[in-house]
Image (spheres, rainbow, N blue to C red):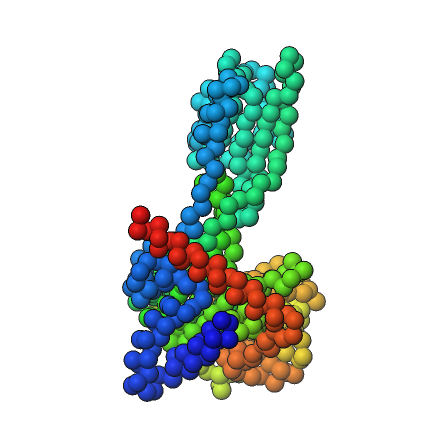
Length: 458
Ligand SMILES: [Zn+2]
């Protein structure tokens, strides 16, 4: 199945990147359907019966894997019949005190209240945000038997606070925080980028901010979101979201993402090799998405992208001054283009405030006209994407911009040409592992698709 899939991708990619032929325009249209059918993330079909429509529609509905959740209340009610205890669930409200929360939960128990007030673990109850739920179990005298609350966590696991009465005569309470597994759902979203720009498209498709940030980071080696994104680009994204007892806890990782940028297909899949805790994003043919250098060292954010819209100027003054200027508002974050070491941080004539980083193999990068620096010292190690300073117009600059230079053994090169550096594909057993993982992932997503289509018809 895999090799067939790759074949199709390879063929379609060629079609995608060759816009010269009129025939190809038609093929591109067919491609949308082909990708929807064959691909991979399978998201289009997950939206319903018409892949193309869902794919093109920025308002395509959010699809969630439906999991039958245990009905806790029913179980607890059964318990109450035999043990004469009562369970109540309440939401934390703004301004809640221990007394007011316990009262709403139907707890009338001064001992329990005193315990919660003085026990540090139990007081974690009040780190809850308004809207989060708390469950309490009381006996027939409204004395607290047990209480539990979700303290948050990551997508995969929640931290749950449990307070319990132990001992019958002398009331003694114990509090503990335990880690409980969340139900992991796969959320699938898709959309098209219109004239409103990237962030507007993300909002229209209801992509959460933390997921948008991950997407930017995944493609940071191959796409300059300031300049490459155009109207008509499309995306599909699959990410994890953790739920506990049916309540959303937190979004997790983007597991697969596709971006069609300028008719070029970019795909990434999260993969952690067996026995390794460290994962990374790979193309579907097993190449790492991480490149030695970012496509743009200027952070792409709602703030900076608002500057001049998508037509904002990138001055190609490469031949004149051996660098590339990225126009951006003062204060926009400047990131280390690659892993390296701080060689210089301070002022230089003309450059104003400048950071120079030294990288492997004689590479160095220059970031000039900064308004300020991140807290850094000479010799310090920095990693790709780390904030090193802020856009400004110190030195010889007529407006706020980042002057960016890329040198090899001190010879300036055009930074825009560097980004094409490719990464080797996985090989040997690692590749076999990768391929079996991707095919498993694909079949899971396909199964999901069937389920959602079925449930949508109910
Ligand atoms: Zn410049």
